[in-house]
Length: 240
Length: 99
Image 1 (cartoon, rainbow over the protein chains, first blue to last red):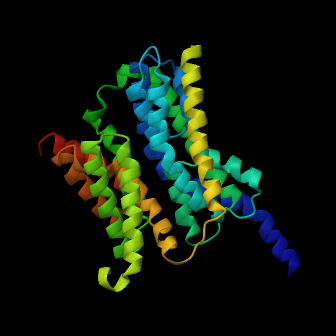
Image 2 (tube, each protein chain N blue to C red):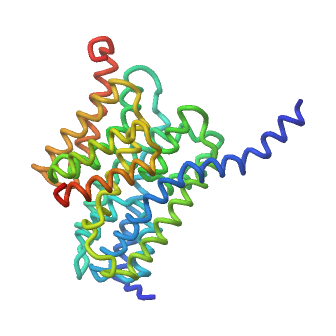
Image 3 (tube, one colour):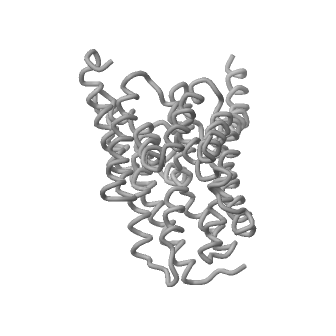
């Protein structure tokens, strides 16, 4: 029996990696037009293919990158870019707080390295997997590196094609991001409490976006959604 | 292979800030108690954050985007992720064209 157990553990790494790649594949395909669009926007702001690709590899955070390229000016305003990035990416801290306890068998240093691959998509998939089983390093790195490769590759392709791609609205490319997120959110449905969370977050984020503007709506919506989840747990009978 | 110092500095700054955000949760996580109502708030994080990011596009852009988002949500109920995305994008293109 111990031998069989060991054999099972040995084969778990590749199997976990394949599971990670399979889970990420549809998300990575959906990321292709988003990456092309981002690269084209970079080219429109005068960023080179190398600079655009480097940003996608090192920053690896779609929402903040779209905001950064929107705010990009020559000469570069570092303060504006820094504040926008900090506000938009503050949610990544919430994600690591929730995810890291579920990344078993990792030392503190390994966890710091694993954090480099936290994005909305990698984290959403890992959280969904964590509902059923622990997340292995092989699963985490396989899905994360697949997305990083596709994201940076399509960014560079989009930057070199540039204006050839035409207006993104015409082919609905600007909506891919939204549709992808709706699909990811649906994976988190756990009954009425999730409905209250989505309603509160969506309403507050939309209102704050109309009044204070971007990127304040992200933290405001996230806080409202968490509060709604908290309140729904307080009185499950009344709200269910 | 154009890489200007000015662009490189900005990209590195964004990368450092983003990584700082990513490891920010390590400090919280070590004290994170998965019990009771605090757990309910933490469990709400995924849906709350993802919803907040797309809320302006869904609710404040125009009717085509709002209706397409509703159709996408219905599709997400039954279809796999990639089919959901494809249906949502097709819906927004048709609705914008004034279908």
